[in-house]
Amino acid sequence: MTDENQEQNSSNRTPRAGVIRDMGVVDLRFAKSPEDLNEIQMIRDVGVVLIPECAAAALNRIQVSDVGSMVILPSNVPVNCMTGQLKLAGEALAAGDPDTILVIVGQCFVTSTVPSVGYKEVRVVGQILVPRDSQAAFSSKLSQITGQILYVPGGCRTVMGKETIDREFLEYLKEPVPLVIMGKVTFASDVPKDLLQAKISEIVLMGKITAPKELISLLNVITSEKLGSIGTDD
Image (cartoon, rainbow, N blue to C red; front, side):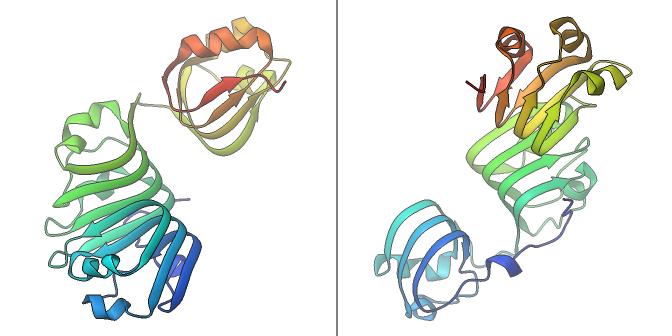
């Protein structure tokens, strides 16, 4: 899914009355004052709540429970909010409005070098993967992160979701590649250690790997960054 410079609010549009529950993202940025949220009595079992600073006083009245992150955004600055599983080109970040704050909620993979970040600042709630050669440019505008950031090698293959890697897949690779996993990857039982070592130069893991027992040690060695687990199906 590519969502470059695209605000994703429609699927997370928040009801304005009663109890809000069981939602990934609750977007309250429509509120201009605490009174605009008077009909909301409770927020519970929610991943992220986005609320403008001008309406944040309403949280003193609303019952809030089991909320992963409460993100209070400035009221006097434009905000571009992107949610979900995202892929962004580095050029999209460079082209950002210097008066706008970029808020990324969910999982984001920056697919190419970031020459600079045009946005006023970047805030992340979730996980983000950024090319290693862009660490200085990106971190200079990263003002807040609730979650994890990993800097990954260039030229990598990316898995978002579920995938099985077997011997035939590895044999088709013309040269060793780094592998970035944001999801679950299963290594099939026909994958030999020498082929895995020859074709996967490095793994950055933000998810889960399952594999035959004889591959586990090698997978741990070539996994340079791990936010997740490596194990067998047993």
